[in-house]
Image 1 (cartoon, rainbow, N blue to C red):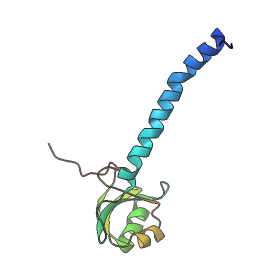
Image 2: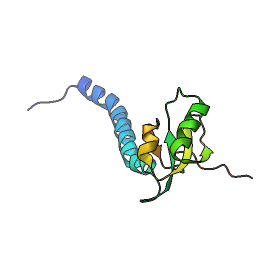
Image 3: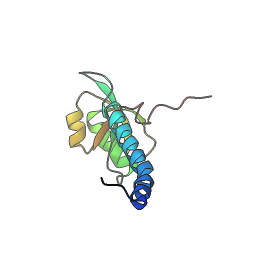
Length: 113
């Protein structure tokens, strides 16, 4: 019969919360990724938050977005522009890295109170 040493039990218990936290974080990211990354709407024109390279100026991102899309509003940072487009492939060719759902991606319009 093999018995575990007290030292191995202590090491296992010390790692357990860290492994549990890492597992929960990974599961949360996997569960939320489709909702955040999926553009809103189906085929045809849709509103998306287009993410451009972070080192681009706001003017450069707006110019790139305006080439193939209608600008709806600016995001929280200069490299995120909320646009209405029916040609995401052209928007990507103009420099967009990623398309987010504007509401779930944190780019919802601010409400007045």
